[in-house]
Image (tube, rainbow, N blue to C red):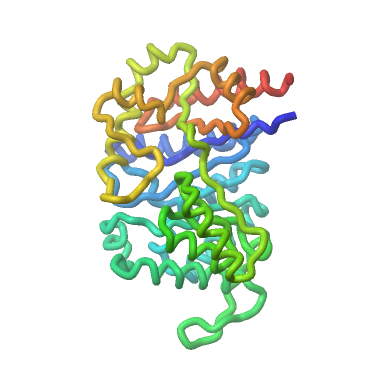
Length: 331
């Protein structure tokens, strides 16, 4: 039987200024993660951005740990973790602890980041971020090894060690030739957010040059979209479209010249956003059809997008869990 790949996206985008309301939204996100896990979702994924006007999740490690504690079976992903914004030894420790809490269910995409304000806010080097990225990756790999290693002139042994050996599953993200080389040099999988035959070829060339085997490239399908499930999509777009726009407009405001990003939008209206079909509201029946007919389809359900009212978010998630998944189990 074809595997059903169901993913819950949690990035906490919204416009709430009341901390009590924000607390309720965070608590609901954890409740949704536990519910999705119990219903057989493949993964619950969080993200990272800082200093966002719409409060995009800035603490993916904390959130991932909380999700790991509330779930038992699904993978817990950080897509992406901006590793350049951390002290690398502390990051190795925190990720190991999350991997232990989850009993080896942690995975992440190691992102370099591109917004200068985030580097400034975290007091990390923006102009030399490529070299810093190399340092962070090398430190993580050494820290998760079995032996002490030299760090800044002293021998240290970072503990505890993660469950997954030799280290938690992660891909090196990026849409550049240096990113492809960075992954291949260490024998790590490469995860560009948009398919690029040129970068994929370079990655495998570099992988062979460094004597590594077993590497791979993963990119989302070309027709990837973020989904919200509703029995009446036309009405839902009229009632809920503004919440999708909150997220899309914020993300668009970070655009950098020459930088390719997934889910890039030109839309400034709900109608235009709907036409682009990167955010979609579809019926349970339409979602069932996609699962059955698309070879690489994975449903990314985004029930709390842009400050979505909690009751509508729950309705979306339950429609998927109670109508889509049972129909697929019958096949």
